[in-house]
Image (cartoon, rainbow, N blue to C red; front, side):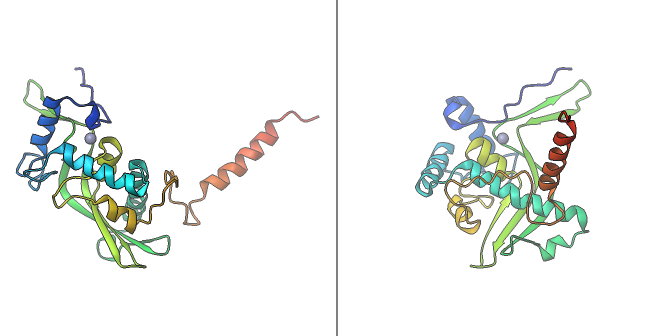
Length: 222
Ligand SMILES: [Zn+2]
């Protein structure tokens, strides 16, 4: 039973017109994917992506920076959720002394509309192939200026791998809001493997210390 090839990244420049048509059909409100849709009924994918690209350009911010920053906050929320039992929903998790992140679980998983294929076997058992999926949403509040954003867990994938923030629909993350609320600055690398603030999470330092010791021990001594 061979699987099918699922491209992880697909940018609009690389897609053919028929492919864009197909993706747009999946993205429309009322489509089988998400009742509220990924783009407005009269929007085109091309114009949505183009407008957001111009906004990012204006701020000198990259898709990777936004995706990394979103993932950073999501990681905090997921970690806290695994340590607690639902308290997160109402209380939120403090991050970096000025942000609060909230996680909301929803029922069912939403697949990424950029690539989707449902393959049925002889018993009519369906298997979904998609480049990404998500089943929860997040809110991040900046407590200093009382601004906030919310976004679905699929968003970092949409931004990083498709340069897409959704169109005029409830799930949209306005990139300008993300840049302001999350205080994203040009030229800063946000691709941290782990949140670095909690004292319990300093494997980097410990790792360095251990690797230095090992290096010392392994080095030839007279
Ligand atoms: Zn995707």
